[in-house]
Length: 113
Length: 112
Image 1 (cartoon, rainbow over the protein chains, first blue to last red):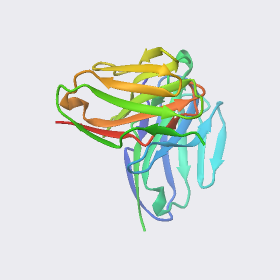
Image 2 (cartoon, rainbow over the protein chains, first blue to last red; image 1 turned 135 degrees about the horizontal axis):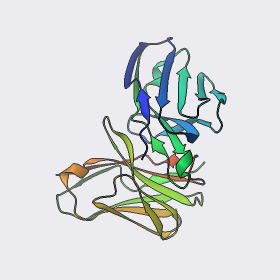
Image 3 (cartoon, rainbow over the protein chains, first blue to last red; image 1 turned 90 degrees about the vertical axis):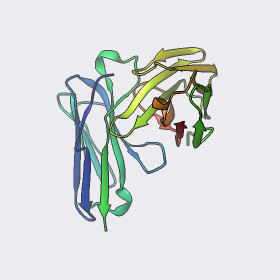
């Protein structure tokens, strides 16, 4: 599958701080999605983005589909301890719409009270 | 809500055993997927299926096979388990290939 470069690999922040993570690729994507995985559970969808430039919020989370269709970012405002987990970006390649989602390697987020 | 159920949360198997991981979804989704998750490597696609009896290889199909005899059930088979198949296995289903995946809670398999 096409590699998605997700960064940072990990973040260790204090409660109340804002968080930003992103995903980039050398290829164009049709969709970008952001998932969160709590320890011991499967990933859960946070935000889905379907067109270039789209900016979507879900509570304290905001994500954008890059205008070049090759990147996306996720911001979390005013972090709280329950934000702890692994965040994955995922996307479907425009050149291979008959294939499953590609996933990034994840950003591990730790929040201290 | 869509529910994806994986039959076991934890499994310990011996090298060389044939292992079956079962996954069932209850929302009539066309597509089902098997991913494995390893630290630092993210989620890697093993196989997916877009219809009953149809399957497509993912990025790392070697050492695995799958079966989809009914729409709601997608099984991952390790023909002869090896220690490098020790991993977390995640099943997912979706209405569309490009989005809307719902994941199960995962099966943590240890091969000794």
